[in-house]
Image (tube, rainbow, N blue to C red; front, side, top):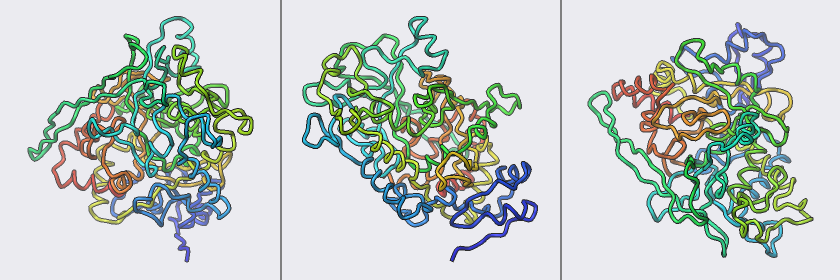
Length: 502
């Protein structure tokens, strides 16, 4: 039986009547601005869990599978017919693409140079990627972005007008593809070296961080531009992306404070990037630096850049091959009249988009546990919610009705923040500087090991656990990082217990 919760009367009967546990769809229609603000404000009561806190994805929350398949479940409120589209989209997300020409025209067009043969190869179990464990391990869920500074007025104008987020490396394009079809050399092989960085915590405990440096070996197309800039990226979890897309842009922008006008040391700013679909700059939401404005464009760029598959928003049969890679650009491709003269038709991309929008966020665990509640208090008290905003409400218009009007708990403001020298990649992207990163959503983070088989975090997987991830925080997050480092072990353990409950 669906249980009904009665809200505090101060929030209004209209709102109270609209919330049903298991559906958790929020009707903001009859609510005042004060009532809305009261619901979305970070709590100051840590004596018990907040209402609906156990359902971070609202009515779409996955409440059935919290095992290794926890990140691969459909939105719980999808009707039966829509679930068919979800599972077809999942099949396409898992599809192994093959070299063209092939008898399987629906799945040919791979490469010629690429990073993976399927979306699922990077996002294994729809989870988090990781750097290679050693020289023999595959780097399939991690790659290097590459670009160069603008060299002339035309390139500077492209960046200034936001018609380009970066200037690609003249020969190697916008990322390094480390696999290739027969007859084509891969672009190169990523080499990672780590140096130990000891950090002293309270109680005289020492944590050894590992600081990576990156290089390219076995370059397949000649030397790199002398000013080439690299940015390592691991694949991100797929959960809750449709809900993040459904948050109104004005709600995200309301928290932006690029000049730190309130003097709290936190100056989140929005990235604005060119939308191919809209033909104008839009708010960036997706990617490590919020470099894509929508899931459709994120998917399209990944299909073209990671797999080499042409599609409506990225109709490049040779993927990321540049004009300097003649043989790559002239290689056979899988473009076919029956698939809109593309390798992945609009129908294929729409089904993948439906799947990506509806991969559910898993239910929280142990929300009423005393240690978890204490850890939550410490997380809030350390100022972590200055960037990791606990709650949003998704908009009601212009989105899939199953994602509309949901109270969600991503623990992210989706803004860019200066994370200090330690995490800097020194590679700008759009309005993001070389020190800025989008706040990562924390929902589902406690299930990382169960789903992905590891606990490696941050944009390049350098952190081997959550403690290391926190200790790498700098810049705007330095005060919160220092507060954590100064906590006695029991408090640090409680804060980690809270994070592992998300």
